[in-house]
Image 1: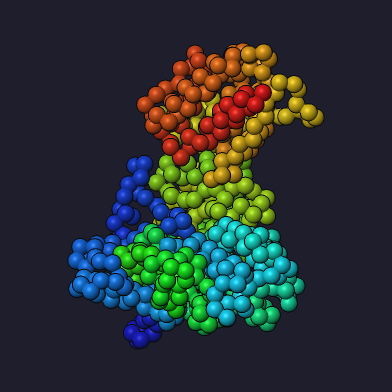
Image 2 (image 1 turned 90 degrees about the horizontal axis):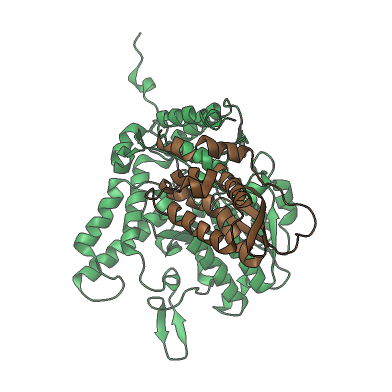
Length: 433
Length: 149
């Protein structure tokens, strides 16, 4: 029986990506580790880089390298153009305008920038609009109990500096956020609500639109950690309505040392500078300085120009594949991983809610410490993360000090998952448990 | 023996499952006892170790902790070694320094079984630089504890 061709061709958005073919773009995936094919399941910590990214940085450094936004020579002008084109590209990747994207060294820097800037507003620095961001004793900062330390400790410090009170949205046993508690916690005193889009331990996509709505209802600023969503899900930050969001280049196939801070224009305009110095000023006297508008106001000193150009190449690479397809691919890997893990005796998944997620699972191996489990997997060429993954309070919540985390990216295949599952089933027997 | 088996010698797994000198007696520590708490911030492994120093002799070591098999076995082996040998303060410090040097040798130095007893089985850890801190945890705690005793 012949089937009309139109019915056999899936729509472009659901056309599955060919991870095996994409792997060719990532030379490191051809490495042998401990006598085995590398099975890289640690992209949540850092992703691998495609040749397009390596080439973009090398091309820039080989042909165009110069300091940007200064100097009148040809290379300086070309480098500035490439640097600003990179900003536009990366901003566009998250649905934003170029002026809404501040270069940072990474998400940790972005979150500290925001927290310290608000701290500066709280002691009277900044424009008249900055007073709206100032914290006073008794004001409240609400974070979730599942944050990476980078989205927790800057708020602890900001609270300590300003007399604000830090409050936490708890997690339920299945790893989802307690939204009833969130609705209770977010109230008139709430000035900032900070949360992660996707947990770096649980892999769960949080209902951030609900948190944003709760925050907006009381006029609180929203700050989102998008590190674990940017490489895996389509993102439109302006449409989401979040005020500020951060991501790290190296977790999204780009270079180390570069990241982005997205901000709504009014919010960036109201934030005083954090780091000060060259390239962020208009006029300077011995006693006083005036500052450039965003984003340059937050980009003191020489920026990571080559890495920014590399990150632009990374997001072009991602856009070329399509985040919808990447998410669909990784959702299948996540399901395959879960189905295998729950069949292995003594494996307990952290945050097993049947909800939207990326390809990431953390788990406890009963009777075997995570470090030992990770060592066993490493001997088979399988790279996973072990420890508390910079989320110690989350681990305490689930009654463990450490876990094993397997995290996928667009280049992982079902075979990677199967090799991993086969090895995990050997952990407890090896250690005599 | 492959490298993994060289790391997880049977003796190490035995000690980690049946840790020796484990448990801190309730109440105040006896006189001339130093206590040290050490934590590996990377993985959250922790140990509390008490060393009683009798004159110049390290007389007893007890500990409590939780962590990977390497860190637990290492603490157990260390406590056994100190209990058996009756080493002086100076000898103990030298013992710890020798252990540290071997573990940081990236597989170049072997621990002498006559000196280190069961703990000589930890020589294999030195090829796994990420695990050296696990094995060192109890030894750093003893170093600190006898300095306080």
